[in-house]
Length: 507
Image (cartoon, rainbow, N blue to C red):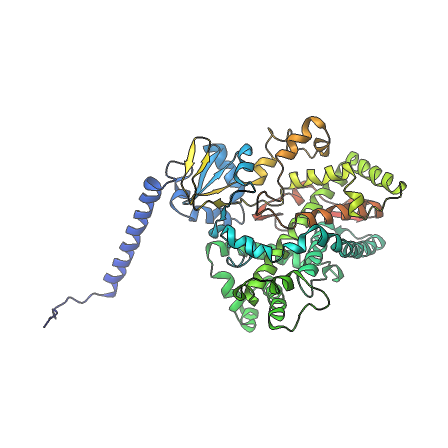
């Protein structure tokens, strides 16, 4: 019979605590040595702390509020075109390589750490695997097809007409209008009414949805914290409303109301109380698709709603704001646009029609230049190939290496776009520069995971620009470029806190 010693020395709680601390220190030392000297990326230049720990990224990304993309630019200045930016990721700055890496045939997966920042990996946008993403995206591809967008054009025109009516109120009163906020509300109304049963109807609200713009910036910042601490959103969603009202700020309460509003619409579709008999939305399409039932839960539809509405609103609104800032501060650009639109009208064309506007070269050049200059997807785009070696110049990276690039690096490369910090639509019309400009142009990304809503976004930009220039004589009001300049990267760029954005007097 086995016996055990009975004279064991009792271990005090302090001894146990010391043992735990020592174990943690040893674990940290092990990780430090492994990541600095034995990791496949050990020879890639970069800050030592970034190689050791995600805390380096956390500081710039979450603590400072979306500053890492700007800091990465500084790192390239110091270390060269390839930099190790966290323990498992490298960032490459090489415009020639962008198209090779993100090409349509590359079956690349997304980095789950980076793309899970909104609410886990349930949305198609954040789905890690190439095949899983393709399956989920297929469920709503038809809603962004050319035929679907032709049908949607009438609704977009109605939303823009509603904006015009609200702007008439500002014209009558002489009050300054926060046009950037109005553009974001327009974009949110368009995409929310297309994706959700109810939509937001922000253009009907007294403040033109100004509160929701503030909430969206807060949501985007919280999402970055959620990238590093995945429990944040689940805890917020599980917090009872009575407790939230006791402990949370008014802005956080607004944020949760907004999230619950989206969740409730998703739930209604799943339980069958909203079958979409009168109007099939994107969420109805996902629920009625041949996806497995596990992909049709309220939580997953909510994830899709959050990403579709988010991706289709902030970027489009910011693009319009940037475009109108330059139209209103550069008289030569404005006069050329107005003349082109007037010429089309005199020839009997309908300048609220996409078919007409796509045929106006200067308007198209202005839109392209705005998409290049504004870089409305400011976040890096990390991918990895789980099966194949990735080759860049004389480097070979093993399967599973996470590699990212920024669209802005290519758009602001003087070798691709001479005088990149100058807003110049002529670069798209000049035969000597247009071909190169097109080659190094990817505002919606490239490859199989390029933005599905790119044609809808361009439709909104074209019709809105033509309509407002035709209807109003807008004058800029107390706005400098610093007011519309990107200060924070929450995947989309956001202005500095307290900025009123682009303000105009409507005449």
